[in-house]
Image (cartoon, rainbow, N blue to C red; front, side, top):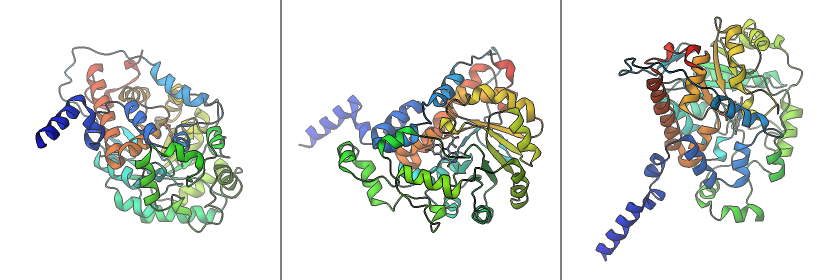
Length: 405
Ligand SMILES: Cc1cc2nc3c(=O)[nH]c(=O)nc-3n(C[C@H](O)[C@H](O)[C@H](O)COP(=O)(O)O)c2cc1C
């Protein structure tokens, strides 16, 4: 009996099937972020998967983000001593082990019950920064307790400035290093996949998604066993617990987001926040200058992962313009379609201090919780390291535009 069981196990092992049940082996077998993405897609119910993967309207900016990085070729230097390589850098004065940060993305507990806590722990373990979304599904305080690395807190300028001031004070009291003001949401972009799917927050077990759920048992087990997924930083704010994507969008548009905000408000925030200030959602030299003139120490070149203005340019295409405008006065970060270490190195060669990723850490979280996010960061780390070696570069500070074709 035991011989036949042993035989069966070694057969499973030999065929690689054992990986399906051993989480760590399963994660190690994912050798690229695309592999992790595929695993997450299999695990998540369709409405949840599409909430993360989707973009605004025709999703042209989602596609453009990705293809623009891929189109950039390298000019490698050969026969350079690259035996000793170093990926570390600084981000707003804080040392980090690699030039890749986790971008703010809300409602992480939709994809895994450990949500933002797991991502913060994995980022700290990898020696890098996590930016926590205002719309997070874990509180500012709980994430600070779970993190061991530097944190940014992402903010919108809501209509009620007392709510904003309260969030800023909580982030300061919890030891967040930087405040990141997102400026590309004067209203919420139209995410058509969510509307078509009747996406609700939290997702509901309906007859339609029961069929889909039947072979996504681990996700539903985690989801139904955990506490309700909601905007934890806004518990008690009337209307914030609306459940359908349409109702929530309307609530956010009408009650929360203030489309009348202008650059004149930046000095108010600058006064309120004692640490470094970063403005996220910049796509032009003009806006980059306004942000820095208003007191920002950094900007994130971003089109919100193609989730806001459909037709926005690829971030890879406008990064140089922003670096040239303010690179001598502030740090420039970039996100959107970064899926490979080569993309990070391209961004650094243009002049970014570091790159950020949104969906990739959600895929890691969905595929394996904290270990999944750690796997994504490890894939990026090894890819960045390999790219530097093959380019003839030992340190990230050596990169410049002469390495791009
Ligand atoms: C599910 C999801 C939620 C997001 N939530 C926020 C948010 O609350 N605040 C924000 O500034 N950006 C948010 N973003 C945008 C990300 O910060 C980032 O700009 C984008 O994901 C980068 O593109 P990438 O996903 O291709 O890496 C979100 C993105 C995703 C995918």
